[in-house]
Every structure is written in structure tokens, then in C-alpha cells.
Image 1: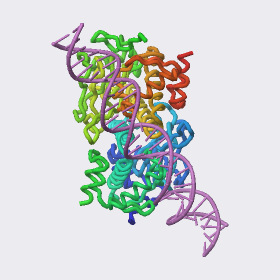
Image 2: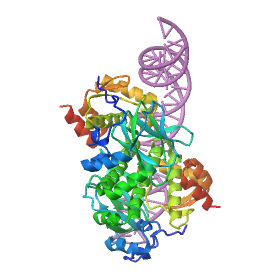
Image 3: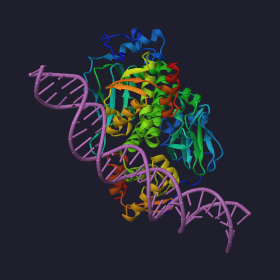
Image 4: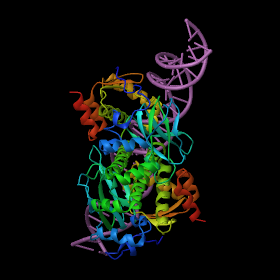
Length: 253
Length: 253
DNA sequence: TGACGTCATTGAGTGGCCTCAAAGTCGTAT
DNA sequence: ATACGACTTTGAGGCCACTCAATGACGTCA
């Protein structure tokens, strides 16, 4: 229960020195080309919890990579409540859904102290004129996002509360693991409320499922600290089919 | 009730002569450049109802544009039932979500007799090396798909049965309208079952909502023929915020 | 250290949608 | 025309997750 995925990092780290470069945009570039990407990246001061990176309707200028911390994106429902559409962890890229409308279709807010690399889109486009591999990578990123959203649609239309939460936890575990952190125990950066909002469940339901999972020794949870006790069964609940599952199970053996 | 959006068309029409070119991929190209796109497009025989364009897991080679008819994409749930992920109408492009895995993540099946333009992706990529505008258009297409999927997630996690169906009908109406057909009355290419599957509802619920809508004179429905009687109220039910709504309302005045 | 606000948990009761079942309608092929 | 299967509609009953309400735990700041 002591993993600290979100340790502070020095405020300005060049891509070539960034521990996330193999997961982030630079992975599409050779070592010498990375510096060109590096030159267009803006690295601002850290965002405090609750601060916005951009608001729904802001003009689309940049895409962003999370360096540390966590970001949620959300949009307003018709009744004015927020509907969370995604969570972004370090190395993950957000903002690409604004490309075709010239405004961001969602708001992006820091869930904890968060460091961000901003990549002005116009310059990113020029750069991808030079580097076909970068442009392919961008397309792959978007394609991946589409697949993930469709998995989410499946979750929302077919899975019950237990399955939703299991799927969510396995997915998080897999993403932590990919970045070299423990997939067994980690810290949730979102509240139960945010989790429920994202998963289409009431807070109370999330809480009840957590309690039940704990009773059945699937997980051990204290506040936002989570330990996955029985990854295999959790994966089975989640629906097995997801790629995440195998990785998380195999990591536990 | 006599609109026929899906009239037969001659089997081989060049992009420059295709009535859909202003909505489809060619919109990104100048008149003289269209022919280059045209040259790489494969136009096969029409697909009969039920025939597959590709299967989940098939190697990703091409993207496809619907010329007439309608396609659904679906994936298998863990229990082996089908989960429909999208419907595609003429001029709409499918297959782009396969880019980053090299296999299609869903199956694509004709819901009625359907004509398709196949665009081999490798050649499309070379072409987009030449034409930045084409490549931007592809990115915009994917970006749009992401936004649409997120609207769908919102529908699935926040809307009740009435709102889901209203949203669905308004969205269809808007898509028909965009292609120059009536947004007031059209023919559904999917069954109640498929609609329910897509919207996360049981068939019986879909049927009951249709009956209720008809009783309240929001729509008039006989089998798959739909007439929208009260677009304004339907839009309000759908949630107003969607861009579709305004267009459909204004079309009715 | 205490008080406050926020977040999480637990319980009771309700309702919307699902499931199961049966009858009705449509389309198609013989 | 008739018969068959597939699709749609309608009804009855049940369950899962929601809402409402209250208590409990946590973290933060004076």
C-alpha cells in the first residue's frame, strides 16, 4: 500500500530525459528527432487539484500529455451535472477529440497536483509532415481511443455494477503496470463519486460494491488505497476478454 | 412515408460522379486530385442483407465507405451475444478503428442490400503523404467518431429509455437530412431488436416506447417506416444540446 | 486540537427496465 | 393461397440499482 505513482518531478525535463518517453508521443521518433518535438513542447507550472487545463468550448490549440498526477475530462449533461468521459494518467495524451470542431468538446481538470506537457497542435502537424511515423502514431492513438470508448459503451450497456467496477479496477491496474508501477496495489486518484459518475453508477452503489468485494476478499481497500487480492476472479468478473486482464493476472504470479 | 433513401445505383461510379462525394472522403481533395483517390478504390458487388464486410479479428487492410444501404458493426460480449457498436449510412466511413491493432476490432454486416467502396489503407496512407488535406480529413473523421462515441456513452450512462430513443431518432433524422433526404419521414434499416441492442434496452422496452411516442403524437410509426410528428418535443426529450436537434427542428418549419 | 466541510458508508423503500410468456403481425417461400 | 419463421407488441411480475436519509470517517485549516 505504499506505491507512489505520482511523485513530484522536476518541472522541466526534456523528452529525451523523461522516463515516460517510451510510452508517450516520443515513442514515434528516433532519438535525434525527439529534440524537434521537445522544442515545441510547453511545460507550464504544475496544476493544482481542481484547476482546469481547458474548458469545454475553448478553442482547440494544443494536445496535452500528462507527466505526473491525473486529469479527468468531463462534459455537462442537459441538466447541468457533470458527466466524466475519461481519466488520464501519466504518459497518456488528451485533447485529440477537438480536432474536427476547433473547440474542445470536454473540459479537462486536474484531480490532484498534475504536471502537463502542452504540444501546440499546429506545430505538431508541421512536425508530422516531416515524420510519417509521428503521424501514424497520432492516428493510432485516436484509433485506440475509439476502441477504448467502444469497450466503455459495452460496459455501460451490458454490464452490471459488479462487472463495471471490476473492469474499471483491472483497467487501472493494467495502466499502472504498463508504466512500471505495481498492478497489485495503487492509489485511486478519483473519488467514489467520480468513479460512479464515470461508470454510470450512483455513489452508494460504488460503495456497496467495494464493501462486497472486500468481504469476498477480491480487494482490500482503505480510502483511496486499493490492493487487488484476487486478480484472477476480478478479471473473470470484468469479462476476461479484455487484454488488460491477462497482463494483470500474469503480473500476480 | 415514401422516401427511398436507399435506391439502387449503378455498380461502378467514379468518385467525381458520385452524388455523395461532397460528404465522403473526396471532400478533402480538389477535383483533379479526386481521380487519384478514385484509382485506388475497389468497388465490389453489392452485399446482400446479412453478408459480412469483415469479421472481428480479420486483418486490417482497408477502410470502407457506404455508398448505398446500411452497415452495422458489432462485437461479441463475454456471453457470446452480439453488441452493436455503430450503424453506418451512405457516405459514412468505417473501419478506422482497426488502425492500431492491425485487425478489425468489430465485425461489419450489411443490414440490407448494400454497396461499398473499399479503400486499401496502405494506398490511402501513401496518398495522404501527398495530400495533407486528405490526412487532416482522416484525423477529423476519427476525432468526430470519438466525439460521437462519447455522446453515446453519455446516452448510456445518463438517459432513460424515452430519452435514448428520442436521441436515436433525432440523430438518424439529422443524418438523413444531411444527405438530402427527408428528416421527417424515413425508413429504419434496423430491427427493434438491433435498436435496443445498440441503445442498451430490451426489445420490449423499445416497442413500448414507440407505442407511447405514437400515443403522444411524437411520431407515427408503421413497421420500419417512421414519421416524426413533433420534432421539437422529440429534440427536447433527446436533450436539446446535440447539434442534430436544431437542424431537425429547423427543417420542419 | 477541535470544528468544519467533504467524502464514504449503510439502511430502507421505490421505480424503471428486464425477464418470461403469449398473442399478434409481417414477410417470404413453397 | 397457405404455412412457416422472424419480428413486434402487450401483459404480468420481479430484480437491480436508484433515491432519500442519516451516520460515520477523513482531511484540512484555523
